[in-house]
Length: 210
Ligand code: PCA
Image 1 (cartoon, rainbow, N blue to C red):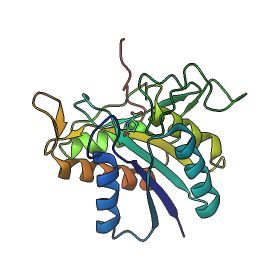
Image 2 (cartoon, helix red, strand yellow):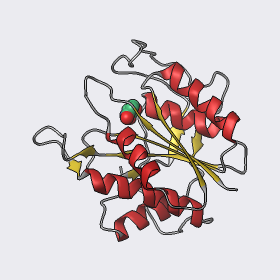
Image 3 (cartoon, protein in one colour):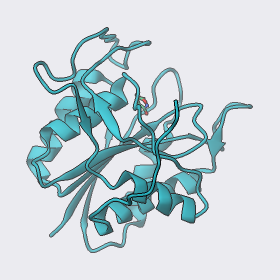
Image 4 (cartoon, rainbow, N blue to C red):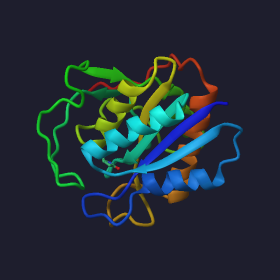
C-alpha cells in the first residue's frame, strides 16, 4: 500500500497556533483516500524535528513525504523547490537553540531539489482558486532544516518536499497576509493528491526574475 507521511508544525515565536499543524490534523480527520496517511505535528526545534522525521521515515517507509509549515507574511501557498544545507536562525527555536551558519547535515550536499511535482501542485492550487506559487527559498530556519532532512533521509524512489502556508485568516493579526483556514486545509489535501497522482512535473515556467 502507498504510504504518505504528512507533517505540520507546532506554534513558535510566541504564537498560540500554527496553521500548518492544525491543517494536517484536519486533513487526517477528513482523509478518505485509499493510501495510508501518517500525520505528525513536529516541534519547532532544529534537533528534535530532524530526529523525529528520520524516525518516522525509518518506521513507516513512506512513498511520499510532504512537510508543511507557516510562512508568516506570505500571501500564497508556496511549494518549495529547494532546501539548502544551512541553518542560520534569526530567532531561537522552541528549545532555545539558535544555530548560526551551521550545516543541516555535516558533509552533505549544498542543496537538494524537492522531488515533488512543485509546478503541478502550484497549478492545481491555483485552479482550485487558492493563491499559490513555486518558491525558491524555504529560508534558513526549522522549515528548511526539515525539508533538507526529508530529502536527505528518504530513499531514492521517495518523492519528498515542503509546502509553506500563509497565516490563517481567523487568527492573523490585522494587516498580515492570510488565507481562510479551510483554504489552507484544502491546499494541503490537494498537495497530497497531486503528489500522489502526478509523476512528471509540468514543464511550464514558474521561476522568478529576482
Ligand atoms: N515555520 C517556520 C518553522 C516552523 C514553521 O511553521 C519556518 O518557516 O522555518
